[in-house]
Image (cartoon, rainbow, N blue to C red; front, side, top):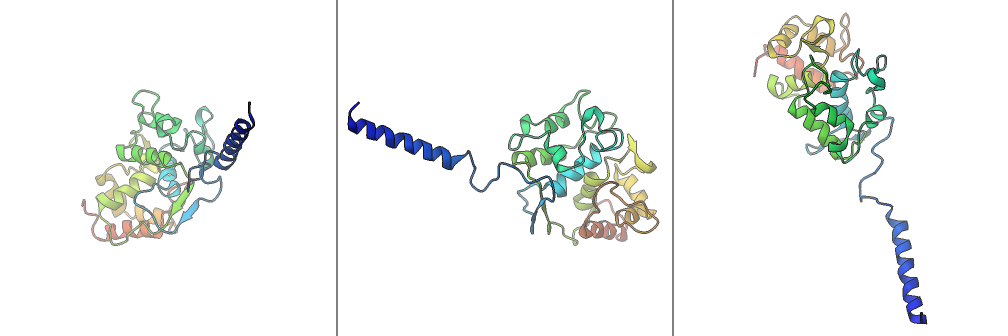
Length: 235
């Protein structure tokens, strides 16, 4: 091999080495390690294009999966506990929802699906939320500012909050405290008797809800209370 060829080969190999050192398979602006195991990364504003773990995913899983007899800290059925980001993250492949165990079990239609029968399966919108969160990187994230107290209709706000935070524990197949919040009619009963507002606002004399989870934001509580004050319309 002549001297010129040796120089060219040396430069080529050096360039490849530098490329390997500087690359490390990183995606610009995206951390391959999604979030941490502690406090979620906080955003001051909620982007409508993003799904936030602490705001949307964790409440869904707490209400529908990490319940007594299933995947809570006490039961951890089949060795599975889904009570925190680090534990949920075990069953997720960031950026690959279709190959993530968490998503696979919620979309099954046989006896292996979660939540198991006789509990209702997650809605299409709830499944889509979890899938989108995973495909966006499954970050341990949280946001504020995405709630509007001027919006308090049953369909757009109250039912969404109930379905995310409460329905998993309060439906005909799992009547926590003997309370059903699976329909407008049954939710209205608890609104009229004062239990709904009392529990979510953690008022004295009521069992604080969501049980085992974080209190709803002041905005979410306000939305529910405004809906009740307006006469609990089915709007």
